[in-house]
Length: 340
Image (cartoon, rainbow, N blue to C red; front, top):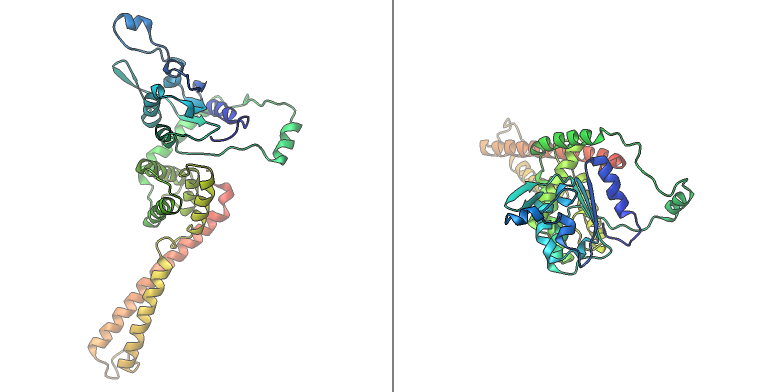
């Protein structure tokens, strides 16, 4: 989350921890924050045995949900270990590498990173959101609420187990979720747009993770393939400064129609024009005789049959495109019900 203070960024983290279950870790970073405050203090008993081991219970390596406020104030002493936890969910403690139970890490900051090493930290967060103050109507609702604080006291205690089941089920189906060539072309063109028009570099790692996110979106809706509608999520993934999000969003909407990104309509028009020219030429040669009863040559009749087959293939292609458009329209009409 990027945005001014007092916009409930930490509240979202606390509520998410209640839904996920398990321990919640929260820290406010400063430029003087030490590794001990994030990963746990060194074990004095282990030091007596010449072992460099941390007491990690109650700290980030053992948390289920982590909220790291003012994360871009993290110093180099923290960054290397933090990057490993965020990217691999691993923590090196002494001579042993442990799996971290982290389900989600939320970072928050009032400002954007100002160095390359912090850019690497920003790159580890897949989803990005610019958080602003509530609208005027939203403010009226907050001020008129009976209580100034709202707790999730009515959360089903079994919801974290249900969430684990849902995540496990979706994870097992991801290998069966296909990403068509038209979606890949859209992402390729989007990267070129970001590079050439916005001067924005997007790492291969980020694009691979983004493609997994699109598959998760499709799987959570019970679909077997990624749809263009899922690609709208990329507006929350690929920007580096908030002003770029709107440009990404406009590019996606401009190229969201099936067949547009791979030039299907233009290619089909080109083929039809070629077939029309060939057909007119064959009509002149055979004087309209397409059966051979009036003496048309065998070679000309064979050419006519090839043209008919080409037309049938184009007809199938256009029917498939029509079906894709119909399905796409249904998804757009139901966009408000999209889980993501």
